[in-house]
Length: 216
Image (cartoon, rainbow, N blue to C red; front, top):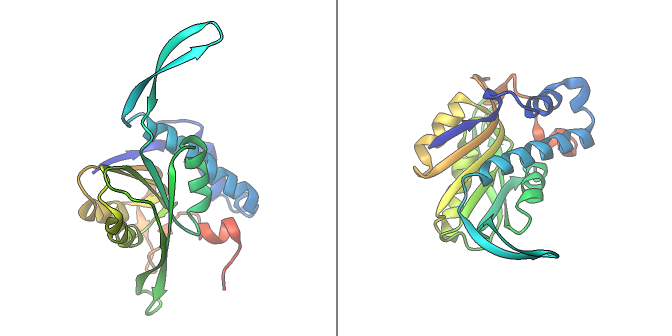
């Protein structure tokens, strides 16, 4: 797996990362969603640089020209509900992509132990397509691996791109062991630690709650 960490090179993405982490700013759910969306747009641009392109002849009012454009074989899959703002950002750039949605959540067995439950999945065929799997938080990596096991039932993608906002070293190592070699991870920033509940530290909190309100 190739790991691409975007904040290793200084850019405007650092501003958006700062705002989604800052308590006084992240409390504005509309601004939080928009910052996640903007990070998704940057991730989409970086992913696009690695895709297959084809030549298209176009006509302008003054003549003909040729341009290289990405092939239309992308499927965006987001993990509900936290993945929706990130999905929107990716879809802003891959506006002709197909979309898939899947639910995955932690069902706690104890205060520190949990299992991943997947209860909803809607997807087109993934066979021989480019799959972009979006989840803002890559903590333990167990959700992404559980989701991938379900996705494989709809076909084997030609290539996989995992798009995340914040991750942990442990989570990255876990998905490296469970995803195919042709997978590329695109992530805005990486933290070193997980706490005893499996949450990223310092992280940002619960991305789904910050985007859409606290759940019961």
